[in-house]
Length: 144
Ligand SMILES: [Zn+2]
Ligand SMILES: [Zn+2]
Image: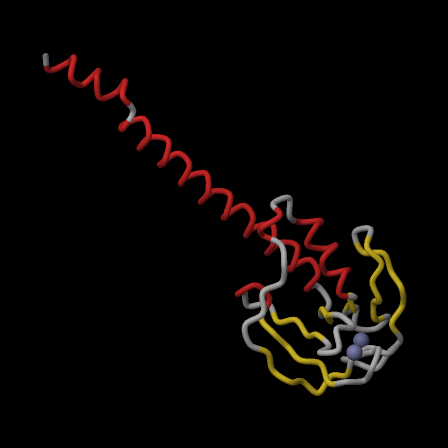
């Protein structure tokens, strides 16, 4: 297969245990659909946080290495990271270093969401504690 960016050869490489097609020259990576899922599995433990979010996409002049259709680019998960994908579902293109950024972004996001979830939990627990009978009766006892 041929690199959509620089026209060099794509070579099968292992990236974090996932087989990807990497350009020998510009080091960009082509991921099949399930390979991006695997990359997300690598970063996420929480099931709901997985799944690629795509709001808008734009046509590029780069061609899919499988079917030569022009790739479209989109913002990955509301971040500043731009990925390109084939509309015929052949996969995604990541420029050199974007794979690391994807993993990092996913990990940061998971951490943030867990922190928010935890803060909410603590808040709910303290509310419940305030509303609990024992607390109310203790207050009553106090003012007796
Ligand atoms: Zn290349
Ligand atoms: Zn394609």
